[in-house]
Image 1: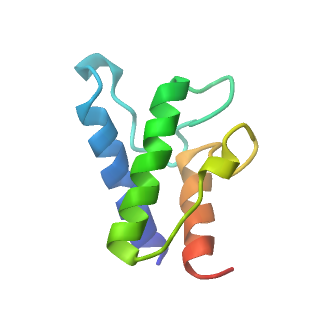
Image 2: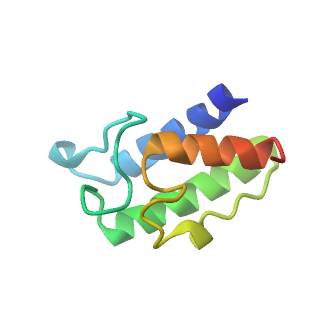
Length: 95
């Protein structure tokens, strides 16, 4: 299930990258920082990412994933793409 969750998140990143200039693309890496002082994403990009991921999780897996409550926690699910994938996988699997 982690692979499917990662695929959905990478699709969301690709969709977000379509809205960004070519020289400001988000790197598809589990180590890419989403929130915190080392993040290259501004608050609008983070909110858009959260909305796209939530929508894609619902439409693809029929799972309601609430990520908005993770905003503001620099050590939480939105710290990196790796932590986001892990968090989403746990929620999908009911852990």
